[in-house]
Image (tube, rainbow, N blue to C red):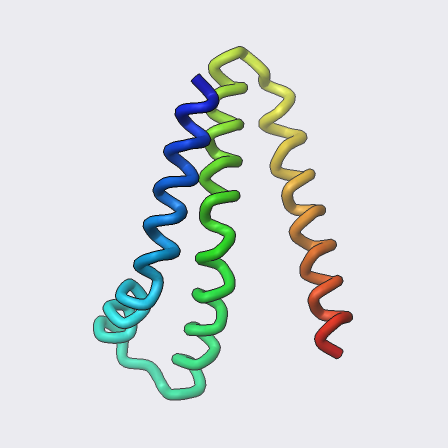
Length: 97
């Protein structure tokens, strides 16, 4: 069962990555923003969209484990992901400077 959920998460994530530019164009068509805000929003979106398969896989794992009555994972798993994300962000920041 977890395999199907992870496969679906990967497929949806891949579709979102493939459609990232049309999604971005539609979002900026809806919202009128200054060029500076648009630039920062574009950068943020283009970074975050690549994390979408991993985020969806995390939801699939939590849902699957919840179905197995694994309550402790709800407390532990998001903290682990946040720690990994913060560490990766700090590494990227150090590499950029």
